[in-house]
Image: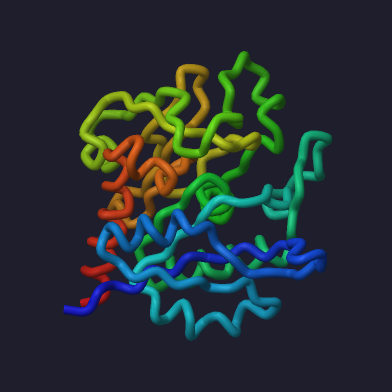
Length: 243
């Protein structure tokens, strides 16, 4: 039986390579390794200026990962830019939102991570706080300085949720690299995990075809082995979709 193809939405950013500035489409290697470990075949879907050109790429996806990255332009959730907003790329956001509309229409299973979780929430008519300072409550560290595979803060997982079933625990330590946080919950999503300061750390939809986490499970594959189950779930759902 052929392995399911898991698309990973790319990031388009300028990089300096051998003293020259080059715009590159890329994705962190950790996503690819996690997908392969779970039994899938990853491939990069580059950010295209004309999203319609990506339809044939999206059509061969059995599953799709929305990875981490830059902030989402607040124009996509009806706000003006606030002082704490970081780097934004409107074309990048528009392309990812196009991809979201496609996979929702074609019932392709999705795993959203960090920015991916925030963008999907926005695409489903939710919103984010543009900077965690707007949350107006004392907060834990949500952008750690230690290594990416270091599980720094603890999250509490709601019982009887898909995430709880996959992780198998009420609480787990995870990593964290974000300054924006979920505000209004998107249509069809429910909160499944949070930190002790109330920040939303995971969401999912009713049938489990959309699984969203604020932390980075691709970096925790060895330090927190329970997180492997998130990619395993995506690959299993993708296999079912492939049939």
